[in-house]
Amino acid sequence: MKRPFLLAVFAVLTTSPSLCSHIITDCGGSYVSFSGQSTNSIDITQVPGGSILLSITAINIQPLPVGVVLTKLIRREADDVIVPCLDGFSGSCQIDLCDFMINYPELISIPVAGCPIPPASYVFNSNLVFNELWLPVNGNLQNATYNMRYELKIEQEVVGCFTLPIILSTDGV
Image (cartoon, rainbow, N blue to C red; front, side):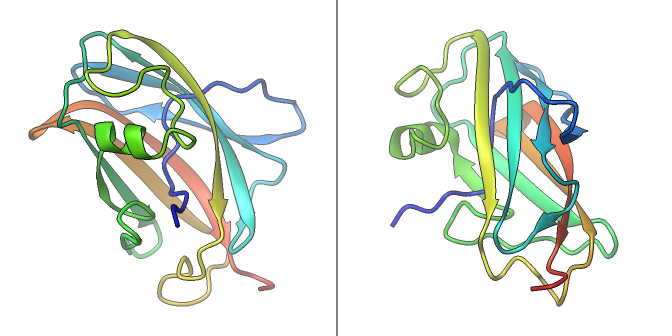
């Protein structure tokens, strides 16, 4: 069974003033720039069962060829614990972006069927669902801040990158 993963690339949502949000920070790259935010009705996401709405815009100035790798690194700030990779795409993993677009079109709705991805502005909405029981890595999470870093790479060159802080908790679970 195909499982959603912690990837939400490229989206824009209209945010209600009552929602909490975190700004997506572009961390550089030679082809793709990112902007956007996460929105949620509460600032702390419960694990399992919580979710975060992501809205991201990606603008690529050059075609993204076959072989683009998405590297996700999810790190807990308090002790630098890295969330492990599960099922090849949940957690801190490396994913072939073109292969992912073909096999999971419902999770990353790019209006192209595969690579190369032509230069354009792409807007995406995604809902990150935190249902994995393994997420409380090394014990109970009580309002733990995680930094999620997503890099698009061609060979070893970072062609696009963004980061997003999130707060997860298993308190009360």
